[in-house]
Image 1 (cartoon, rainbow, N blue to C red):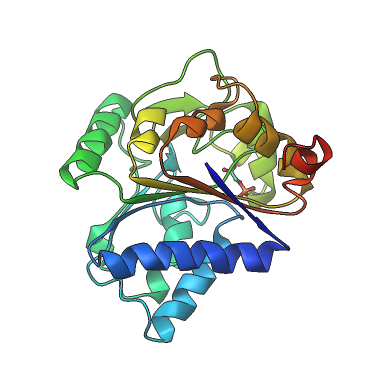
Image 2 (cartoon, rainbow, N blue to C red):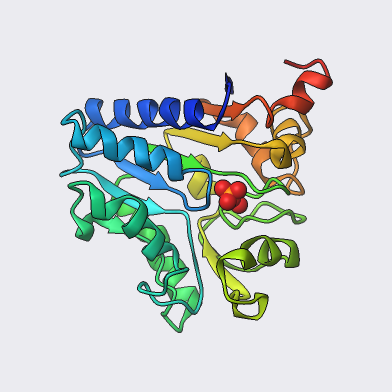
Length: 247
Ligand code: PGA
């Protein structure tokens, strides 16, 4: 695990976009595993800038997103498909037909999970997987639990996660109770992983992830076993690591 410390969110976003951009330059038809949430928004803005400046070409890039709420259509403004369109895809020259997000509206959840696992395989795997991290160290919607779940699966969201996301909905009652997420094996099979964390609220999760025991109760801790995992975190997110003297 390589840990890159940045002064602030802006520097974090620039560094993350540089790494993603380098993957696209080296492999124009790269498969990017993408993430939603507030953390990657700045990174996407930097990637858009790179495209506008003529440095990045997404015309052959393919993407697979980590997760999606079950029950939301792609045009619902809180669906992760909508998030990706508005925060990245609408602003670069990626072919939307090459972008993939689990479908929130397929009734048969198991079939949708199988389809998504097969899709990732058919694409030849993920070249770079971008990740945010939850305050409870979840990645995607892999919440703390008693075992690591391998493939794409349907999860019942923790109350804390629903509460954290309620700010985006009219009320907490509108936050879906279930979501599709890539599993730990889907994520760990990516050739390169880039985890981003900013702010004090992530300090415990970052410490546990990078320096704690590897256990499913800290889902992101499994990333310690990945051969090419880069963590970019700002000073606040790394504050506990510094306090504990491990950085
Ligand atoms: P955030 O969410 O980027 O909005 O903090 C991260 C996550 O829950 O994965």
